[in-house]
Length: 210
Image (cartoon, rainbow, N blue to C red; front, top):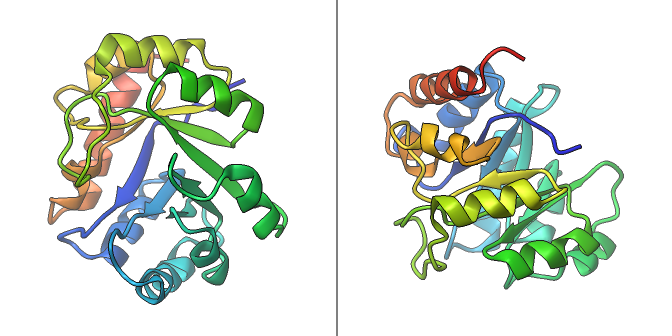
């Protein structure tokens, strides 16, 4: 059964700093914390991941490194998240055989989600739901209806991503998303813990008593 954990935090140039945001995520019990540093040397990604590793180690927050399985391995992260243009998932698993590591995969349409079922990643990203400024070359926007159809049909744990904010999150959840990522609201805030808390409050309110 797909896992329900709510907010998946991605850190890209956060105003409050990587360590402060990681501490906020851990304090609020966030399940996943992904380090996404584009167009920087691997050494810088590994250095930053190693700063975050002591913050997340031994907590309920899993540290994921974006794109680069070797950087994830060097930092002893909990997992790696791969895009459609990154190393194929099967190769990444062969390259990083440490036990218990997680492998996530981005999907941007129905065909990619269907192929992901055979690959059996630990979770998939589904998006972008809305237009987003976090990528230099954005993928085509899915919209709420299409995102919802993909998420509801998938047997995999799915995370809706792309342009999600506190204001539109209720719509995202109403269309079938169970988990979600909100990048800019957290990374553009000087009070990331407050933003995380508010996003999770919306998630809990929309899901109702379970």
